[in-house]
Image 1 (cartoon, helix red, strand yellow):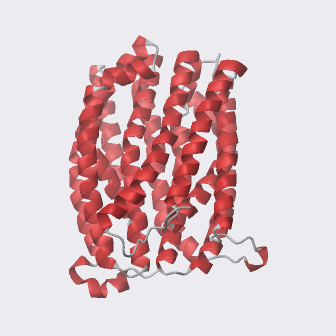
Image 2 (tube, rainbow, N blue to C red):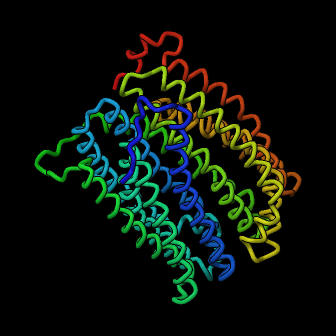
Length: 453
């Protein structure tokens, strides 16, 4: 039904697009779901939009461990697929599913307990504090299914069945949009519509992914043969933990971002939340491209084709620059249209438009930089990526906190983000040096010694 790609022999440039475009389609539709949810909340209930905006930091924390698990799983499977060691792949998937259940359940319990503290930190209005706490608790427990689904989908991608995983993502994301619309419009469930829709579509997606894993004999459900696989733990340590830490930095920074914006009113918080979701949509291109290149590189590392791995890296970064040159310009000139479509309130839309007007052009550098960070993480250089992210967020928070408090102007926050995005070009050159060294470009015949495991 689906033509299999040869990651070790197909032309690099066509291969990048064959892997990247289906992943981009799936990711775009998934993030469009978040934009659509924002649209429904913004036009149906201003309080619901405010709650979704406040939940943004928690959503980044949940994304942190989801990404840590699925990227570790994807890399481990891609390497074993390159080695043609398919027997080990089934064991890896089982290990990761078990780890995912344990970690996501523990985090859900902790977040559920501290939800009232989070509400107090943001000084949520007494009239809606209970609604916010309930929403947060339901979302974190629903996320257990989301984690399992992410692991099953990453297993398909790591093995090379990118089209199947992408089609499942598109189907379930469109279903999510439809369900949220039905719940909001006819069931009048408000912000809880997002919870119920997430639960339903995640279960459907998980079922479909498991079906294809079993059908293609990637996953074998033999409990007797289960054992703890050291490669899975290795990848969680060298890749998963640094990836999760990078997202935790985003989680922590969004607390401070909301704190920086909060003195300017509820409309400012809502407007910034909408703009940040638009930015997430924009950056999904870099995330999809980085993930696609990572699969190609790691399968070639497993197959000891290091020249091809480095060629994939170079051509991938070039592609990122070309794409974001167009994206940055397009978002800048369409910022008013984007804001008017997503938000009915003129006051909220003004804050969204202002953010995009100041930050959009810096995406030309921010996109390739994010692709570089993702590749560092997937090549076991996650610590370097964490350090770069840490410096980025600390500078944004420190500089913009001082400027906005000193001059009482929110645009200084936006300008700080834009300037630091542009400075991020230095991180791209740093990533080039690190990846060249990792792949042993100067001495490829000896590079195998650097990439074992």
